[in-house]
View 1 (tube, rainbow, N blue to C red):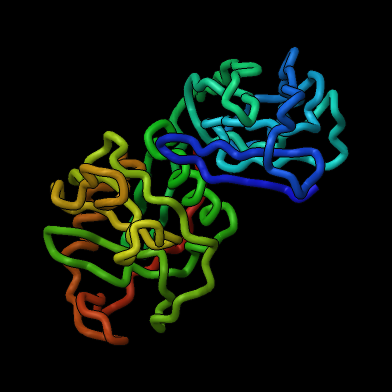
View 2: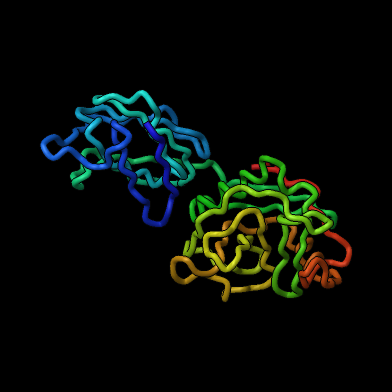
Length: 280
């Protein structure tokens, strides 16, 4: 069977999974049934398998699991059992559902994912250390994306390439010679999410395309509420805040800048990200 996946959104999309791989419609005379759904683990940013048990599952069904970043049906499913593989990024209590193609609810349940503390990342720069607390409850896709870059070491030796006094400090996307390394695929914009571009927060930079954010982020050196998205597909997604090192951000925010590589507001002397690691 061809694997099917979807992106988590404010209103989770529902993907139809069918046993034959080519059909995407329920058999009119036969409606599947689900007697239980079990999980092997519920751990933040880990893959969880949802095992669906029932009858006539080969006739097609829909699965909605909002806590998941992606969902894939594993091969080898039968008419009585299917397994969905899912990376959990949604924090808190969320409802999942299995429905027939005609909309009939076959099963629903809760995924309860709690964290002992919010994730934190320590960023060591050439001008000092900044500790950032992330908020996966408000911006699950964005936090997971940021941590993917942290974990693969992408940010090491990148620079803050855009510094606008009393506004923002932007970085994470360029080397000191103003080259852009290959990034992971762009993510969906998570606005509005209840977080505002206030002084000391971190948000994702993007192009005019709302769903274009990859690795670049910015620190708000002032309250920039004009950057907030009031409706879906607008603004810039905040996903955390500085808990230690506001003074370091302020120091970076006043470095002399120039025009270089076709960009304005580039620091005259590069300000490097020496390391970025998750410390909580």
